[in-house]
Image (cartoon, rainbow, N blue to C red; front, side):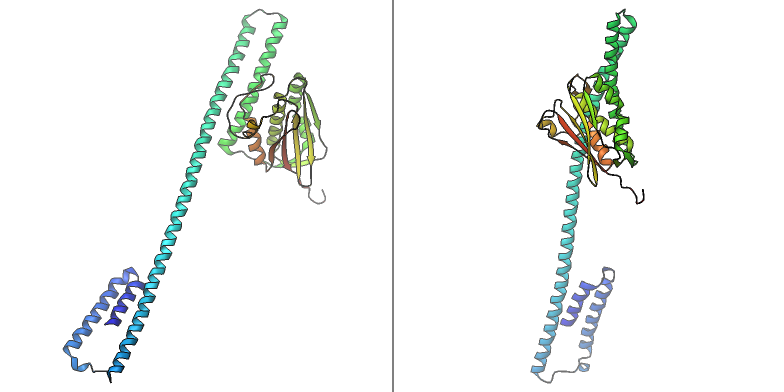
Length: 342
């Protein structure tokens, strides 16, 4: 009977659930049949033991085998249980980590959305203000008799306000498009000196009108891998910022350095400089109205745009502390690798 109990235990442990009822039923029918057969025909079941010692040895061996198989079965059950418990624990840990990651992402997204909402609120306010000024200047020009000097002054102010508003809108639209649609990057061979000399003509005029010396220390035949439009947007923003925060009579210098792998474009000015507190928020979405030395208007979006566009081109941008007065911004791009024979 002990053997049948052991078989029943092993059956419960190893047999699939769908077949369990069949095998348990078969075991019970067999046991019941043996008992009935022994009861009805005891003379057919001979006494197989020659003496008590043989009987004791048989019982001992049966017990030992049964005990061993029971231990193995229980060990199998416990190992399966431990594996399942560890698997469930790991899955719960993964779920918890994913949940924490999602919560962190949600927090970051909420913060980003808050900054974006603040940014566009400031943009809306800062655009409405110059547009009102433009409207006022145009009404004055249309309805008022003025001297030639007054007329010239009004036109200069109108041009100044329009230029600042245009620059602000250009940055906002470029950044918004990259955020909403995903910026498309077309990496090509860019001649740094040629493109900067050609592409900074507007900035040269702005610097000239502000009596700022815009100096280009560029080397010819230095090529980088970049998206030309993004490349120019980044450099123009840095140069415009330098001009904006440099007082009249100041100097802005654009220099070029390179090594075997990278090209470094430095934009240095002797303007207002950047405080340590402000440096921590560089290249971040911190919506804030900014004013240059001549009250040029901005929303602090230019550097964020520079960072996003530089990284999209597999470049880097950073700020270097200037021991003297002013600021130094550095942009690095990978140098263009010429094929053999070219």
